[in-house]
Image (cartoon, rainbow, N blue to C red; front, side, top):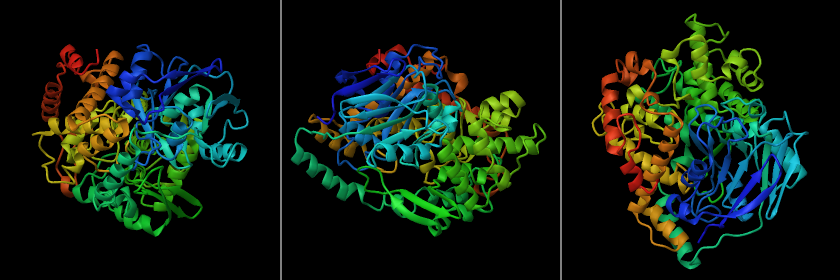
Length: 586
């Protein structure tokens, strides 16, 4: 089968490491990536662990397709306990690191403890060493990667943090290949808390499958009929900036800290505008879609910006200047900051200032002030000492909780839930806080044919989407490939040499969602945290297709109640013993 069959466990405190056999039963039930990583974390992490303490663990997890020719299978899963939310946290990061780790012979790396001094981890096949990062500490994430490639090999693959991670900023991210990020929930701060500046890997091995001829033929046919199609090629031609027009036209484009759902200058930030500054294209390992867009304007160059940055760091901050957003994105990338959280906390500070709650010297549309924020957050300097807290804690300190746009401490992505009620439920019930990658009902509501202003059928829709995405991210397939469970099952059967069907995958997705929920329940989360900001329930939008709309609290409560019932959870959102038993979790 396509697993390496080995897990590398590294004790950063002692520098010791050992190789363990992959738990085959867990791999059978959870496959890899998100699911298998959460299973390891759930079984090994004691309840109540401080996410920034040496007792927290960080798991780098590949999947059964990693390193093969399966399309868009190049991502790495990173799983830990979030310092931003206290929930379970899984992120994924593109590029080539995951494949290189698999070629080195490992399905996963489990990082434990805390290095005595700033260090980086070097892995080359069976060679595993902790090395000094004294000369790298304080450098940007991109600068660190460039330095390590110059020192070690141009072919080395690197995960690195910037100053934000070193300073334990809970919106810090991990960067690879300069422009790819595992961004949400403060995963970079966990790495920084371990005095771990980077992980560098090089492998010389290969991947085996039971029947190579059948596998190659299966993947080739799927590539032809299911990947390189009009349904998916938008990722190459336009990329996610195409959503700017869709969100504007449907009235769900976050504007001025989610006060509005339309932005007058949206055309400055859409796909057509991005194409004018596009300087190149890029794809991850085994990627047939090549979604990466290099953008260059003035002295700033990034891969992106993606829609989430354009919306949350653009319209949501009242910024009309594309060059300014590209600079903001560039600064965040090297400093190691999640652009979604940074954009949100900047917009929140702007509204606090304009409402006279607390003067941060920031105002909507002030590009010059906006561009000072990333450095201040990363260094915890000046107003950055406050903004680095994130929206939830900033509101607790200064007020404005009713318009603090977060769930469980994780800031909103780029979709206004007053114009997509199912999206509101998806945010509220996401395992890691407000997230569009657990379920994306906006595709069928605002962007599709479903009525976005009703709760009818939305609990079922969100649940089904969460199951689908949970198994998709356990196989670590890119979100941009709109493939069916049937296609997933066909490829997985060929890779593992055993028969797997759609229902097997659907149940695996349900198992992963419930295990993540059980982790959070164990940490004290329940119905009280499955909630949206008061703005969503009480303030109507004023312009565009969503003018006059809000999400009535009673309707939300009914939708949530139905969701719990469908899931087999009690009225407090806790999975029942029967549900857990059915899924083989306990």
